[in-house]
Amino acid sequence: MAATFQWSESNTLNETVHDGITNLNTGNNDSYNLNVSTYPVTRGNASFEKYIRAKFSDTFTEISNMKFWKSNGELVGGETIKAAANVAFATPSATPNGDSNIPIVVGSALAIQSAAGTSTITAPGYTKYIRIQTQTTGSTPSGSVNQKTYTFQYDEV
Amino acid sequence: MDNTISIECVGENNSIISPYFSWTACFSDNTEILQFNEDNTENKFELVKEKFDILTEFFIYNEELSKIFKVDLKKGIINFNKNFTSYAEQREEKKNIRLIFFRRVRKILNNSLQELSKDIHYFLGFQYNDKNNNNRQYILEIDGLGNFIVIGA
Image (cartoon, rainbow over all chains, first blue to last red):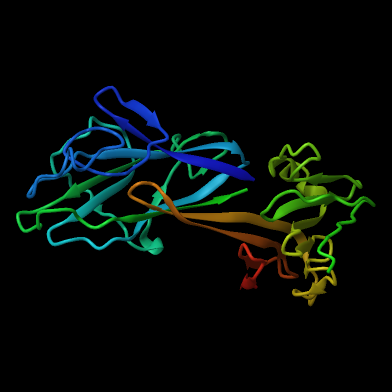
């Protein structure tokens, strides 16, 4: 009963998979481990969508009840973070999407499914994708936005 | 102070090697399955599920904390620590007693995916059918320090 997981991000038209990513930064480029200084979101625009998923490995029998939400990090004026769970991969776009605001409490957290679309994972593998996009308006102040904190929760045996 | 915990379900003591709560399952055929073998390899809980119908006792324990919880699946009782004081008395006939066990992992990460905290709670107990065939549950939620509350009764 000791599953481990890492975050994975997929990019480009070809769904190029990058396991073990080291940040969840959004920016003006479709790339993993993105440097926000190099690819900042231009005020009034949206970031490229980010397609991430958890990858479980090691010894476990079943992973279930997977939830994801933004647990901290105040948004600045005009800044929103959109998120959707269990989506199919599509070439990441910087066009503002119509996803809902990312949940900020466990009670309304995104319920994440396995890659097969089931509520449990019984063998090493991925979850379905979570799509994240930062959207801004003309009123969003220039400069860095606040650090965000995300929580990922799951039950394991 | 003696911090060792011995589990005796088939007459042998089991060494404890995990810093977290580990489990041992005991069965009516006088066999047992430990989460960790002597060579430190880990058994899946799936092995326990395969023998659920003859599971009689299930322990989780942490040697460093000197804390041990036992679910007695014959009586429908949860015991805590060495004296095995009962926290769920057998007030009524319990039929079809089944183990409830999982752990809830909550990882809090920043944008850089640095783990700001990792919180693990163990959920341990049993469900059963009462004399009217209603399904009932007793569950303890146990934190990483062995503190616990009853969340289902």
